[in-house]
Structure formats: C-alpha cells, structure tokens
Image (cartoon, rainbow, N blue to C red; front, side):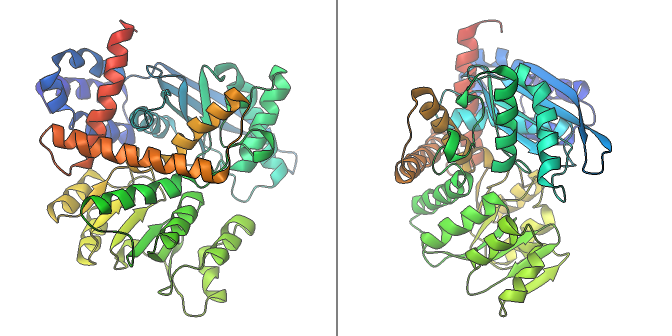
Length: 443
C-alpha cells in the first residue's frame, strides 16, 4: 500500500479494535486501489471517509420465548455510505454477529452495489439471534421487537434492508408487517426480498446463487471455456448454495458435493436438488440425512468439502471458510476457478495460493452481486407499482452480471493487471464511489 493509504489503514485498526473481519475487508480494498490513486490523486481525500460509516446503530432487542421467558439480543444497523443512493444491504441473524462482522459486510456492500451500476449505497445489519430451533412464533416476536427499533432508521429513500444468513422470506414478512403496523404506511420499497404476494420480485430468491454462476460462466467464457461438463463443488446448503447448484446443472455442469456446519456429502451423479430442498427448506434438517435417501451418496462428518476434487469451486457458506490448507487442497484437486458466492469466504493467504497456482479467482463483491442487483430491481418495481415476469427478471440479472464481469475485466486491463478480478472489482467500485463523494463535497 502507498504510505498515505497505509496510514489510513493504521487509523482504521486503531479506531476499530477487535474487529479482524472489518480490518481484513478494508486492507483488501486499500491494497488494490494504489494504481487508481496514482492516476487520480484527488481520490486520496476520500479514502479515509469511505472507511468510516456514516452512521452506526446498536440497540437492545427484548423478546419472549414460548415458555414465557424474556430474552435479550443485540441488534445492529451500519449505514456505511450513501454516495450513490439510499443505504442498501441485508440483515443477518446469527450468533456470530457483532459490530465488526456488520461493518465488514457493510464495507463490502459499498463496492458490490457500485459494481451493479444501480443507484444504491452500502449498508448492513443484523442481530446475534439464532433462528435455528426457534418456533415460528418465537421468530415472529423477535422480528417484531427488532423492527420496533429499526423502523425509525430506515425508509425507501433512506435505507432499504434485505435478507442475509438467517433472514429469509419468513423473517422479511414479519419485519415488513411490523413496519407497516408501526408507521401506518404501505412502503413496499422499505424492504426487499419480500413475498410475491406483497411486492416481492420474481427471481429475487434465486438471484445470489444464479448470479454467482452467471459470473462463473462469463469468467470461463473469457478464457475460451464453459461450464459444460465441469465438476463443481459448492459449500453450504442454504439459499445461495441451492440456487447455485440449480443453475450449474441447468448450464451443463455437475455439482458433486455440498456442505453444512456438520460436514459434507458427495454424490458423483450430481446433487439431488429436490432432495436437498426437502431436507433444508422444508424439514430444516441436517445434510447427513441425504444419504438415507440417496444410497450412492457418501456423507463425511466434520471434514472440509474443499478436499473433494473439482474443476470449479463455489464457496457459498460464510466468511473465511477457505484458508491456506483448503486452497492448497483445491489446487491439488485440479480446481481451475474459485467464484465467491458468499461474502469474503477466502482468506488473503488462500487468494495468494490460488493466484500463484494460476487458479482464476472472482471476489464476492463482484460474483455475488446478483442478490442486491435483483433487490434493486425490486425497488424499481415497487416505485412504479409494476411487476415483471420471472424470465424478465432473470434476463436482467444475467445482463447485470455480464456487465459486472466486463467492468472488472476491463478495469483490470486498463490498469495493467489483466485477469486480476480482485483489483478490477475494487478499483472500479472505489472509483465510482469516489467520484460521487468528491461531487458531494465535504460530507
């Protein structure tokens, strides 16, 4: 990093102690933007500002469980940067959530949203609440209490949350119902990821997984290759993973393994998507149950899915799931490309190992931008009281992901870093935000 940028990073670490994920996300961007700062010295004056959230909200969330016991969780909303439009980013409900995680996610969201070309800023939120094992009524009471505080900080022109880990259609429905109840307004555009019956967008549920595969398709095409016949491994078995698996199969590849927190399953004939959906979306069960119904599949407990040989890896679970050892295993297993469906699932050490081995690598801020892209389309439809068909939404998603890929590729070429999708994504995203911040003056 240039000396001036290094001092900014030192300030970020000093001002935000004990938040390693946020530090990692900031360093990764700052290490990439040196060429842009050299060509545009005026950008230097916004570097420190872009690393500091515009607003951080932390609040208590009391709720009552089914036994009548009052429990307390902590809620967060980090409104990071609104230079390009209203804050936009998901809500995560998971025990691991704390301020550093939310800030890392919000910081990444700034550049991810910028890469889509849409007029949306970056933010993120959530709570250290675990919806797993909770009844629908417990989840409803938690969501209502959470929104009772959050509602005063959001709005269609201010901040538009969506879902993330632990926040799906059920949770969005409860959150929207409470927002409507408190405000006495039907602001459909205040949340995205809504059900189709009350303002949701077709293809939103599928968008992050589909988008990552569309990006992978473009990346392979750029080098004269395709998904046809590729052996693919996907981490996770939630929403992003399920729809990534679906799209890989539609485009001619075969997903042979996926995982959850307990281990992974290998099915060389290809993961049975109907069975996986039944286990995870309907029964909310464990992945090791898969082998009860698929006799030829093998379940492996407590091990890492990246030891399974593959051509293409799609990490779709959580941050820092691919470390140095996992990256080395992917290289040994013949992997030619890693495309991040999750947010920052690959550590810096792992990225260096993949790069040295010639494995193409697509960072999450580019590759998993499909979810927020279709959220932006949902906002457009809500604003115009319009609805699009699934095919229309999917086609627009595909076009956006092609554009994101091409912007990253072209920017890397422009700065003399051909094929470096990390640099291309970071420089292009930062450049767009920096131009807007300079235009706005000292804000």
